[in-house]
Image 1 (cartoon, rainbow, N blue to C red):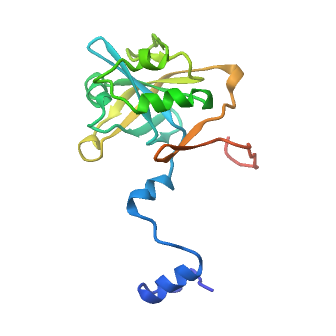
Image 2 (image 1 turned 60 degrees about the vertical axis):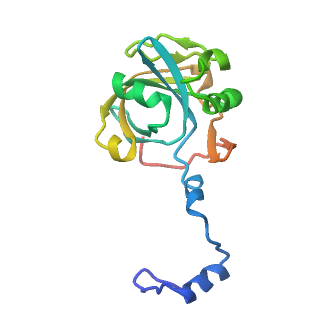
Length: 198
C-alpha cells in the first residue's frame, strides 16, 4: 500500500499497475470533459447598438464578495470583440427547460444571425450595463470586466458582478452541465452536509 512519503517510479511497471487498477489512458482532447467547472450559462453583450448572446461553460468563481467570475471567451467567438470593447456583459443562468435554446445559441454565430430572434429568447434592458438580461433565465448577473491581463495568452476575462437578478420561485433550479460533444447532465439530488462555512 502506498504511503504519502513513498517515492513512486514511472515507466512500464507503473503503467501495468494502473491497468491492473482499472485505469486506461484518456486522450488529452477529452480531459476538459472531466473537469467541468459549473453550469452552462449564456453570456450577452452589446456593441454598436447590437445585442448578442453566446453559450459558455468555461467559467469559475474567483471571489465571494464582491462576486468575481473568470471566464474564457475565445477570439473566434463573435462576442469576444464586443466584450473586449464594451467591458460589460450579462451572465444569464438557464435551467433545463431552456436546453434546446442553449444548444441552438451555441451552434450558430452572431456574425450571421440574430440569436435572440432565432431562439425566441427575450432580451430585456439591464440596470447597470448595456448588455441585456435574458427574460427566460432564472438568474441574470450584470458584470463589468475588471481584469484582462490573461486575455492575450489565455482569452480569460475576470468579471465583477455589479447587479444580480433572480426569481424567488426558482431558487433550486435544475441546471445543465456540459460534458462535451453535445452531451449534458442535469443537476440531480441535493445533498446537504454540515459545514463551518456560511
